[in-house]
Image 1 (tube, helix red, strand yellow):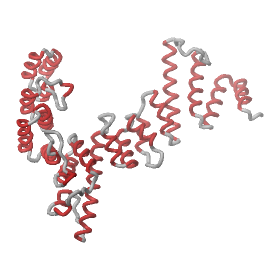
Image 2 (cartoon, rainbow, N blue to C red; image 1 turned 90 degrees about the vertical axis):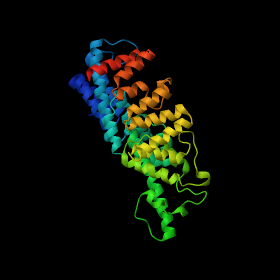
Image 3 (cartoon, rainbow, N blue to C red; image 1 turned 30 degrees about the vertical axis):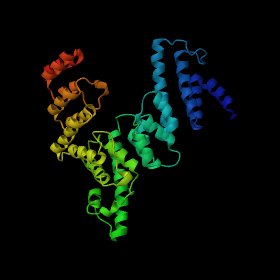
Image 4 (cartoon, helix red, strand yellow; image 1 turned 180 degrees about the vertical axis):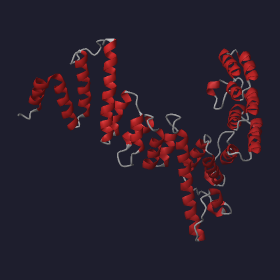
Length: 376
């Protein structure tokens, strides 16, 4: 018998009919790992079963609805089959278009979770991070493959909420660990003994000599960026690490001293106060710290920071009072903190929400409070 594939397909069709022909073709292309062609074989078989044109000449020609449903089902099955074959071969970039076509990210996310870092990971990082298939794993790969500088830039462009908190924790822990390592190295060289603590605050306590002019043990731009990001943390242990970074930064001298816009004009100190309050430490003094700034400076910007802090602390009545005084006329879509209606809703203060909604002609918020107040 001839081993020519064209002769073999003729023989299969003669002896077993169309089903045998399709079986032979599918087996052959799968053995050759020609998975895109296997996908087309599956669709060709379904077009034959449905009596559709076997070679499409006009892509715009409508398909009868009852046949479209069957054809689409086969399309999904074929895409999942071919995508799975690529994943089995460890080829995530080739698998992804098939799973993306059927909006099924779970198998690709599971494959990315098991990936070991090596050269040429950019396509997988793109899928994981920018395509939002596994944002945290993508961010972890960026950090491990390209370093903290690239990771900070990427975090500033984080594509979604999913995985953001975990990635921020990783970023803070990484910079904190880098700072601890370098401080320990410096202390060991001077004192002849390596400190046992991994607390930055304990490492720098009583060691003013580690802060000479023009010296910083980590890139100061990295330090500033990570501290700024850290205000979004909710994890108490990582908040503690971020607070230690502000403690270190507040001791820097010369060109490394950082000044910014109110209410974080004394950058490291002000961020430290905010982070301590989020951790439940010195909460009243922390709130008073920003209330004083509210009285002295940029009311709108500072009010947003204070309202955001109070909302995080679930001190909604105080947040509402400040929002009513300083943010009542602000565009809610431009606020970096909860709006007044949102604060009233969080506080379950439906009377105040009703009154505010009426005064603003906000029928939508009024309806929402009416429904919420009657549903308990």
